[in-house]
Amino acid sequence: MLLHTFVLTPFYAWRTTHRSHHKATNNMERDETYMPPTRKDFKLPDGRVAVRMDYREILEETPAFTLFKLFVRQFLGFQLYLLHNRKGNRRYPPYTSHYKPSSLLFRPEEKWNIIISNIAIFGMLSLLFLYARTYGGKALVLHYLMPWFFQHNWMVMFTYLQHSDPTIPYYRSKEWTFSRGALATVDRPLFGWVGRFLLHNISTDHLAHHFFASVPFYNLPEVTEAIKPVLGEYYNYDSTGVLYALWRSFTQCVFVEDEGDVLFFKNQYGEALLSAATTEASSGQQS
Image (cartoon, rainbow, N blue to C red; front, top):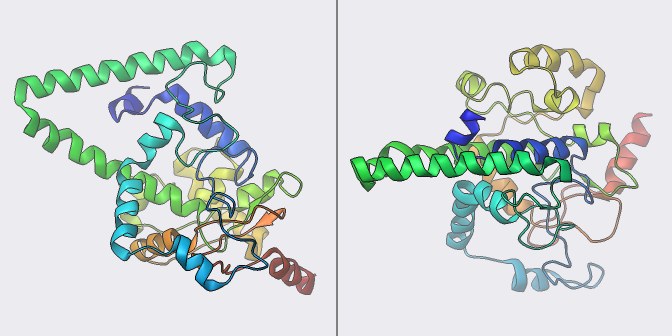
């Protein structure tokens, strides 16, 4: 509670929705965050008649604007998600908030926990205000806001890359299972041993974390090594450099189709790296 409050994250609210994310990872109807836009969201023509020019007219952006969107998502995306459910599940009403005790994100019996989180956040904001009055706005920016922004950048980066990749599917409820959802993540060696130490193995052993959420972070490497032989090729690992991987996912994971039960990301030209038919054929050949 204290640590989350110190970085302006409402602990009980975040714990509730993160628990829901673990119960429905990459389920198009029930997952909580990083929900992909669909063809309908962009008002794209039907995929059977759309041509490359149709996608370019609607989706193509200048590199500068893409960088701007990436900047906003990296440094403010998590707070915008908490504030009004940005990139959250569309089953909730517009502007659903982690700060609203009556929000549909929570069960009625969780109301007072959310209120306690809000009181803690208000207390932290009050301390920051007093700090700024005592030492000045520049000191607040240098000693708290800048580190806080970069902390959010790293957190958004590794959580986004764990679940947003051209090779990772989303499922509708008909095809979703807990195991499929837990497998829909990518382990990445972000920043090598420094990332292991500072990020508590959450990037290098995220798949194990989804299968066994109660395992403490210091045991996750052992769990990962134990499940690799069992999972075989279903274990997803990518050693691509972090900045390139971020740019690749941000530009290639643009939308998914409104139809179908197993969905892969498509890029700004309506092209997917994989399809459900491709993966089914691959599984058939192996069996």
